[in-house]
Image 1: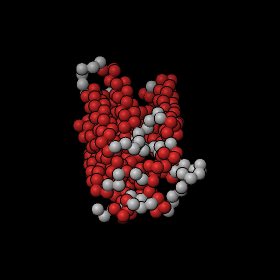
Image 2 (image 1 turned 90 degrees about the vertical axis):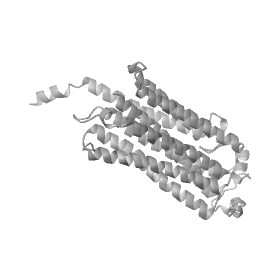
Image 3 (image 1 turned 180 degrees about the horizontal axis):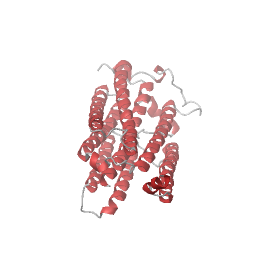
Image 4 (image 1 turned 120 degrees about the horizontal axis):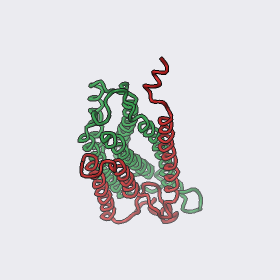
Length: 130
Length: 213
């Protein structure tokens, strides 16, 4: 079809975001499937946040799990990240990025919660300074 | 159609083209460019993770001011989410049209993507103006500083994404689907989809968790 389509055959690697070249209908249906799943997960997320039907302490966990699932849907259906050998480089870069993200977010929360726990409550601290 | 002559343009019409097929040299330009942009996007996501970390740490530091439950309008956020998700879908349609060298559908899909993005931005600006007008601006509390930094940074990304989108539409009109233009379209699509991924984290962590507590 185009010169880069031939390059795929020669090199067996895919650029990130590159969709496997199929026929038009299956390519559009792939996006429609992704949109459907994303809408489903988003709607569930918003529904759970505002309902009394589920056990309240489970709501934050459910929202985070739904968010991670939806990010996965976006990666697979919109960014076309696969586990295939033509995507190894993209997946490795993504994995490295995720490690940093978890270190930064998890580490910050852990350290700050620990500090909060070990620190005297603010009002008592103020009284001592007087 | 007016783009017919461009459709037949050979690979060497792109001044930066490398013919990697003849010898096992560097990877094709499209993969090198796409991969480089992927690394940039991941570093952008790492930057966002720092803002998320500071927001999570400061989410209860309201300094006696209002918290998320009083401030956020979940209905507004739901509309914003729908707009951005649909724009991600139409951006995918634009990539397919670009691969097929269909200029008309490319322009239609990109225009719809841009309008949806602009609608998202408009709702977000309205929310910010409303908050600042009520005296709950970024200087009110550490929580609100973190909120405006995180959500505002995402809004800035969307704004620059819309500018990029408009230049891509103009470049396709002026130069057609040349190989270098196609690489830019690939990078733009990556950027736009990544914005939607970050928004998933924003609406979950900031708005839904924020208004739940």
